[in-house]
Length: 146
Image 1 (cartoon, rainbow, N blue to C red):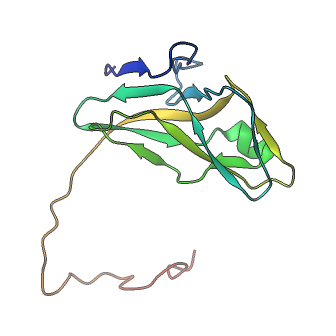
Image 2 (cartoon, helix red, strand yellow):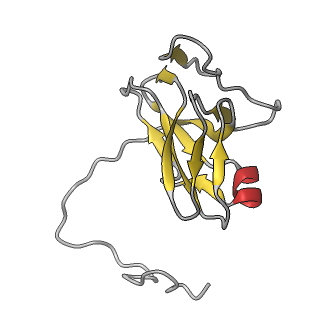
């Protein structure tokens, strides 16, 4: 298990993310609000967590939707998976979008997303004159027939 240091950017009251089961890959992160936020149908909002992180170099934290919010309310993380880079030290905010038909109210302490600590592999981008050929070639979405 990798150690991720957490700082509560607010005076107090922000909840430390926690894994709900021994086999969980993601841990719940909660809203840190002074008042409720209503996300109207079709709209989005940045929800503060009250937390900042020190992520070990070579890792990121991915911000992913909670399946229960998506299934029950149509609320999901807009830029999923969002990435928190290892060198970012600001407060983490989650961009929620309401794709449901009803307004959705976020209250302080609500579980709004899940965080997954993941290794990062960096690529070395090298310009070339031509690429190797594949069966798919330059076919786009749906081009594999599946």
